[in-house]
Length: 135
Image (cartoon, rainbow, N blue to C red):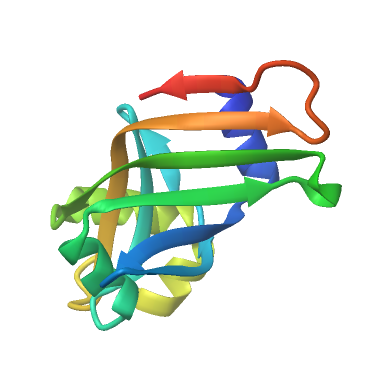
């Protein structure tokens, strides 16, 4: 898992995929933190991504290294948390989020994690089998 976390530290912005109806939706998204077997992110409950995740609680995010020599995909089941401590941890991990929402008690600020999923780290061009971790 350390190799994956090191990759995310160097490449913290990925493209987050959801489903709306029968159509895919993708947008840039920042990585929050990894804790207790889950990858944490945040959003705003007025955004379409929030509604999409509530409707279909599964998602995938893809990160690429500079020059696209490696890419990392995280897929899993979405679990929202209204716990103030979870919100504070995600906010602390993401300086821009703290500036935007200011407090974990902001009524539009939402945190969620991907859990019960899989991470795949692979080279491009391929140099053998991808590094895969179930979490």
